[in-house]
Image (cartoon, rainbow, N blue to C red; front, side, top):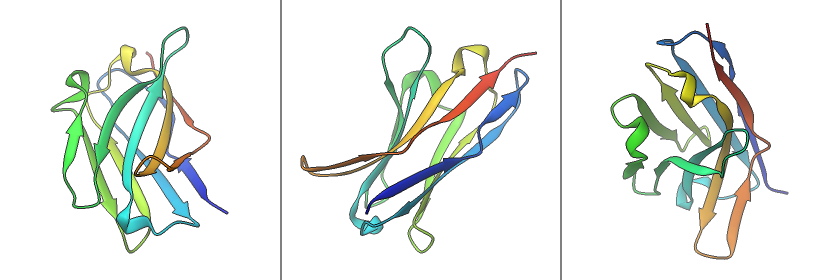
Length: 116
């Protein structure tokens, strides 16, 4: 059974930092592309950052220079370091594991709230 379990969300003031973690089980983690997505109330889910199986990364323009995605294949975990958080970063952040078009798994999400 595939499980993706996110952690690290919470309430942080503007300018603060958080590190999200997503621990995977039930998949051959190292060959999957891993991504973080977010969905704010009333908005569509959007890609935040992705790291492929080779370690290549891609970021949404809105988070470039502030967020960093990394992975630890030995721990089967992907991380999202978020610095310089803004109120518009408030959303539910979800982890995604993808391999081709037929293997696509999601975590349950973790709430990130940026507010003073």
